[in-house]
Image (cartoon, rainbow over all chains, first blue to last red; front, side, top):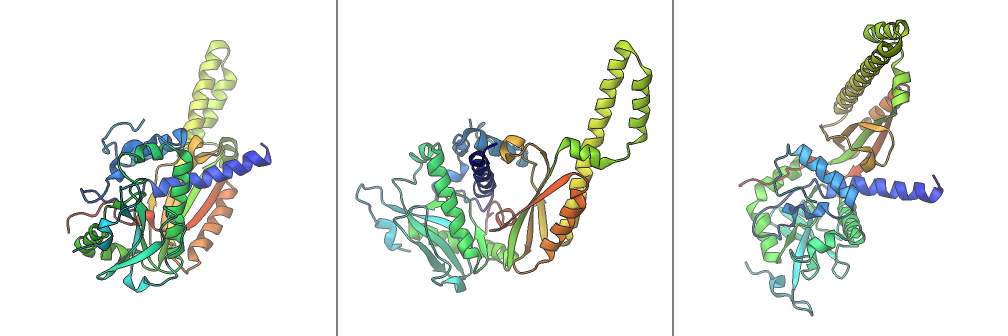
Length: 72
Length: 282
């Protein structure tokens, strides 16, 4: 693995840590006063493998009770 | 209540909304907690005080943050990464100075008035959430184990494995193949048991040095970016100042390193894993 690849990998790993928290954790506000983006599964379509996997984790955590489709 | 920015309009007409990063103590109304870059670089991060709470928020263009265009934006990795990093940096900057209840990405209100009425309505729940993380931060601990290293670290084999090894020795032909398969299965089971035992022990030891802890599902190698299997993906709520947790981590890293397990510590993070996921009816 080249230095550049390693750098890219580290960058990606840090991003995974971030994505895992910022998209999957924290207080979620539901209701008509927000834009309700938090409810939308579409966050999983970006970044393909990365977010698809994070989405899988989240559904596992929620015991498959998140509803709203597969997010693909 | 009449939020003055409710009527704000940008040049192209969609107006401005308020992006909420997190909730803080109102005493945090200081220049030093609010710092950019915000998720919308045209607008600075601000602290809005409402009663006994304060919101860490910034105005955002509703041309950029609305239900219609967000699906597209979220499909754009460059946009998503920049906004996620901005969200985190704003929270981390505040975390250095005060307790923070982090909110999930893209929590947007159409007006300051709506944001303020949310704070007023959920005041008690938010105050409770804030109280539970005051003076504390989140640390992440992951444990990885390479199959061979883990196997070597196990040392002595169980009786079942040793007996099966003898059966493999004794068997011939097609029978030998079957016995080898069985041996492989026993070894896999043994490794799985070791991973699970190690994960439980590491988690228990870290909990002793923490106020609270949660186990998240281990990430797959494609997500973790590492070849080794992840056996622990924990988050821990620890005092912001104390070094007890770091000491516990270092001891575990040494101890389990000898068993073929690599431990990784991240943070301090805003306490994403230790705030209520949803705020129920107040």
